[in-house]
Amino acid sequence: MSATVDELHVPAPADYHVHVRQGAMSALIAPHVSAGGFQLAYVMPNTLPPISSTEQALQYQADLQRIAPQTQWIMTLYLSPALTPEEIRQASKAGVRGVKSYPRGVTTNSDGGIEDYEAYYPVFEAMEQENMVLNLHGEVPSDADKGICVLNAEAAFLSHLHKLHARFPKLRIVLEHATTAAAVEAVQGCSETVACTITAHHLALTVDDWAGRPINFCKPVAKYPSDREALRRVIKEGHPRFFLGSDSAPHPFASKLPSATTHGSVPAAAQSACAAGVYTSAILLPLCATLLESFGALDKLNGFVSTNGRRFYGDALGKNTAAPGETQPAKDVVVLRRVKSEGEEGKVPGAYVLEGHQDMQDSDKEKVSVVPFWAGKQLGWAIV
Picture 1 (cartoon, one colour):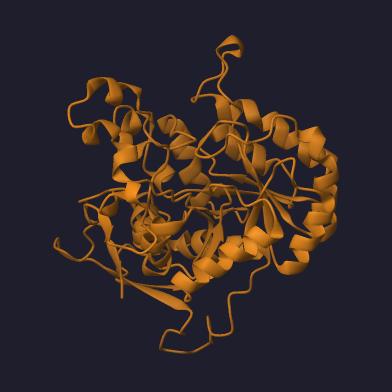
Picture 2 (cartoon, one colour):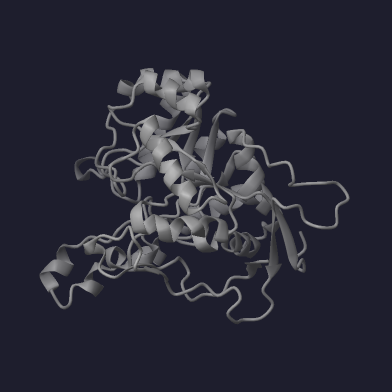
């Protein structure tokens, strides 16, 4: 695609990994999915408590539908001892599409994560039969005795991916938010039943960008420039089993920068950990276009944010996404226009704030505030 193109038509963008939280945070975040250009959101289940039953998933879906009815919310379950083959069959009939596996303690709300995959083989067998998707957070917990830390936790996980794929060759598996060249190579070496999501922010960040910068800190952490290049390269090649899963993960400003809200209490600040998560939903489609153009892959945008993921998950583009010879965009197509001059159009807000919402608790004080990725920066594209 020529760099001089000034308008892009993107068919039915779909985000296959998104966090929208609960309560007041959901009230702020859920409408941002469509505002950021996306019509479908595959929702992660690591809420408090986690979504581990069909009943919980349907209630969560109804809550999100009430807040943001314009978005198609696709639900998942949290892999835990409470999950049984019978529950898998019930979930499948109810339209729940996947199960998310979190190794214990590796990311936000993963304290109930798993430690032994073999214990869940009956669940995986039921998922294989029901054509449900297993979504893998591809890290192992840090372990100093084994030499495992955040920089090699993903590489250490890949043996689990290969073992699961060999044991359940018909089970559809997605390695989530890959950050390394090794992960890209591992997925490429698997069959058509294994796919991989890549976030927008991992196409921009390396380790230098999050070390000491809490807003850019997420799990898995961004790795080396060579790893970022591998992610960019597989998108530029148009590989059909790699697609967007934003892992957009909002946290209150106080959780990302805890020392900023301690009012001079050094001990409290020192004991407060920075929350892991980068927030991109509100700017996601223009951000993806801007990033892909930066490394010569703008012509792969539609595949990355729409068709590759929808094909793997079996989600149709919709009845009105394409019509040969039409000069006007169909209603399911999102139109992006190039930002030709610096100004308010295309500028990422410094924060998104919700004040005085009915779901707020006393502990929320007076508002929920979320700082987005690239706050204050200029995007190259804007939604028409």
